[in-house]
Image 1 (cartoon, rainbow, N blue to C red):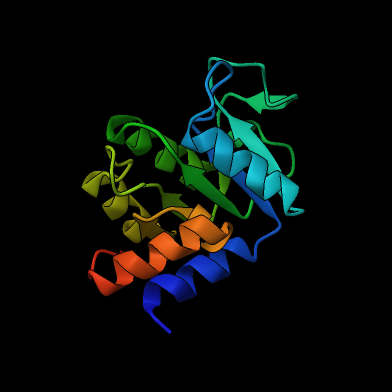
Image 2: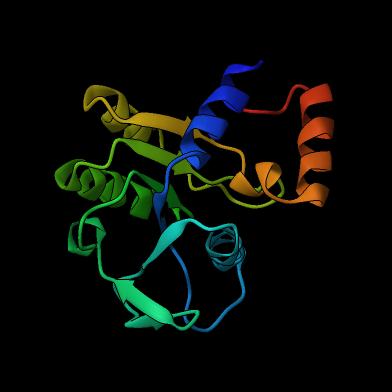
Amino acid sequence: MSPFKTKAEEFLAQERIAVAGVSRTRQDAANVIYKKLRDTGHQVFAVNPMADEVEGDVCYPNMQAIPGGVDGAIIVTKPELTEQIVQDCGAAGVSRVWMHNNTFMPSSVSETAVQFCHDNNITVIDGGCPMMFLDFGHKCMRWMLGVMGKLPA
């Protein structure tokens, strides 16, 4: 099994997952991931400092505000925002971070944020999309990207 697949499966085995970058007005990647995790039985927490509610659920301003904390955080933001969010993850004791990249659009990955995770014992997935493990169409994309050598390590 590839290191990416192993990390992804371990990440998605967690019960409490935050999704940073959800939007109250758009149906973007973060919202799709948020709803899919909620529909598959995860306790999922929306994070956006500009929203009080997303997808009918309470939205939190940062990782530290989530009652009881979370086991992992998926970040779907601009890289500059990712850098602050991983610091919030460190402060909140979040042990796993997944920086989203949907392959065809700008990535959430920041090398500074990746280094912060390594320096603070946070397991990090720096690229790819959780939907590659949750949705049939995306699983096909994962296979194709694997054949092309384009999956994260």
